[in-house]
Image 1 (cartoon, rainbow, N blue to C red):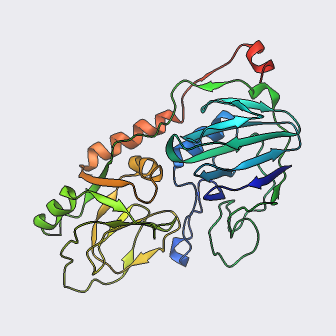
Image 2: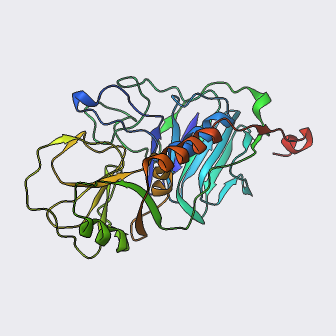
Image 3: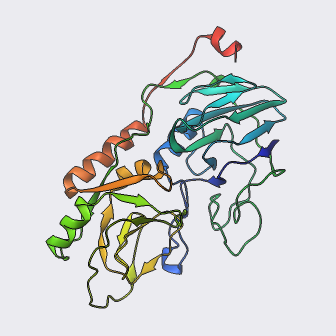
Length: 312
């Protein structure tokens, strides 16, 4: 059993998201940093359809009452297992009655904790992802809070000690690549690209609101149409909104473009008050960047010597 002894800014269960339901108005949800979730899951032998914990910011304390194996990938939040620092990108044996503490945020915003065998969570609409405010009850409709408990399955102990040859990493670069909407005026796009945007405190998993010098939003009305994660909307106030995993499925604002899938993980590792710039990219390069990240999910693992596993 895993017990939440102390929370961080936000802790939710997230997997690869809900698919095939957008025409019913159901957001995909899922891990904001899909690559970190996927790598953590692979380390402990899980499919991406099994949820990991998406831990935003430092401060969380998690208690494990039973033996298990975990992996952490994504933000460096100063993870300590029973007072000893543990590295990202490695499968760690967790002994009964152990506590995992995220002591301080060093880099990035969101860390993904995958547990071997997965959590015993009944899916909603085919997914173990939490959709905040969803019309169902339980852990898949609200953040995890102090006292919440999650049961987990028996681990494959042979997984302990292996690590990633190549790991997803947060970057301090503010540039986010996007596919621009060529139907908008080039002057408007140049203004958008030249501005350094600050992520608003009003942001959440639905979207990042960007604050900066207001853009001149087109006056013509736009008919509502389908949108996806990464869509950059331009509301009448001229402050762009980048839609994220929990966003609505349709929208009626003009669209500046779409953040490429390869850069959604980078975007997910930012928090309010941090800054962004947007860089245009072509479709061919965007597809190449995505393919490179998919290759990371096929990365080989490096086994650790037995004596190192024994010291965990």
